[in-house]
Image (tube, rainbow, N blue to C red; front, side, top):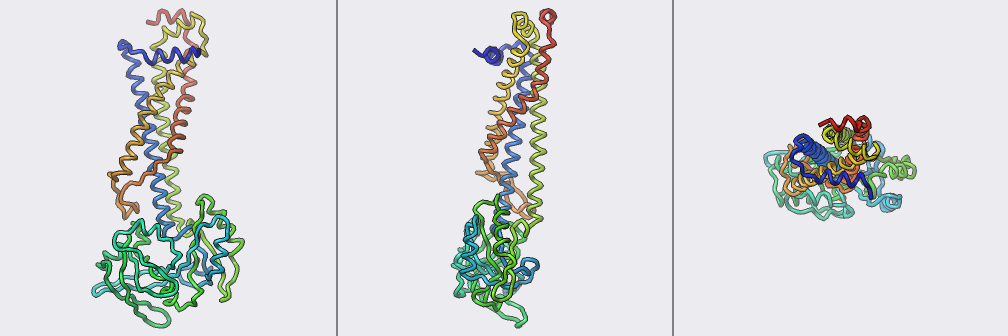
Length: 415
């Protein structure tokens, strides 16, 4: 029989209302662990949710890796690159690449009877992965984009629709200005999307790849580039390194040089900002762990002092200091366990509530999302629980040595 565990269970199950000091101390220690864990769970869930939501939105517009002309990736000017089926197949064959889609950009002006707006027409073809846009549609539908014909249908953002007072099914003219002069083309708005990522919502509208290529005056096998989606985002740099070695610095038949960049290189400010959130989480975790540790140390010291007579009696009966220390550490584990249970119920409950109702709102113009996003990560929850338990018990080891200074003879007269 495990004597320390047995004694700890008896002490913890004891309901002695005469002990006016230890009971409040136990409740405070339990509350400290519960509050600390709940705050840590919510903090990690919100940061994970926020990072992945913003990251998915940025990737939705630019994919994981872009392959294009060297000058295009270094400036805002559009230089075509040969992107025929053979080149697409080369990119698809690269280990770690899940999807490849061609695109072509063309700057233009959308004009109604009363307003106009400068935008970037992003031409995409039948290989376009519309999952991200589909999740953010607010009105209408996504056109069937083509790389062989012009359907003259566009997909605009809610920001554009509000500025130009557009509705689905409405027709409007677009004007394109280049070295060949001014050209006009009539489009029909088939759908409206909204991602709240303002820097993209303000300028990106989608049309056929064929239309964008023709408006640029390029050949049929040319495009602005290709967008690649990788199977595992954590291995993004590995895939990029393979692309650099196999594709970059090669020259197509038009004399243009291939180059590539990751979504992190294309949007360094956003990803740096998201990276700073990790530091905030570590600070919160450290503070909450310290709160739980301090309350547990205080509670254990109070309990030891109140149980001085019992400690002296155990020593008089032959119990060693190590046995008594393990008894009180087991007692602390019971307190911590109850705190973890309450903390999990509160923390996970708050995250589920937010996920289902979106009760906590945000300014979407600042945070890119309208409600606080949360991500319930089972692995993170388990790690936080185990880490809180181990750290809380570890910080109690030193205070438990107070037991070795209690002498049986003196402790009998303690009360």
